[in-house]
Length: 191
Image 1 (tube, rainbow, N blue to C red):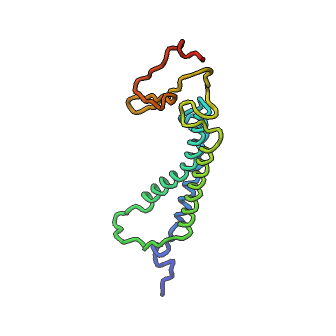
Image 2 (cartoon, helix red, strand yellow):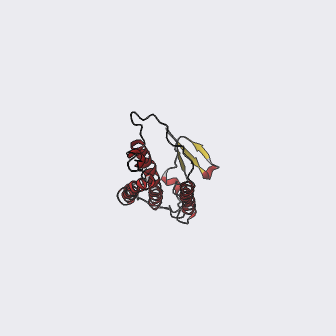
Image 3 (tube, rainbow, N blue to C red):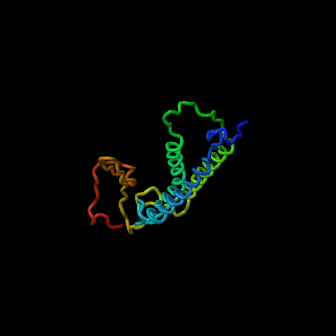
């Protein structure tokens, strides 16, 4: 009597599960939950807050970038956790695994998704920096300054270093000093 393939033993019949589908089904709800939490729960409380138009704009930018980065980070963590659990070394198993060859569809998908995310972030960042609502590089400059004094005022640019401040006076040829020197209010009247 010859043995059929089903009688040859459980090792001959054991079929490898679809690991890609398993990883995707674990990753998808985690990525959706992370994005929803980042956008709706943590997003309104992200620094720098919404105390000014510039801060609100920066907070929105950070929120968008974190929502795009969260699924990528979730995939890396899910894949690492899955690999540690499913493909761990089992005692008594000293055989080498099967030879691994490239998988063109997975490689093309990964490269395409990465390229789309990077190009979107580059375009988004360029648009945000070049938009007319961008308020300059600080120091109250820009098209939508919070307060513009009237009359003749002394311009002072404050540059913060780690342990001190430097004060620059653009009206006096860019003179810099570490001591803030301001004229008395009576001397600042307009002429």
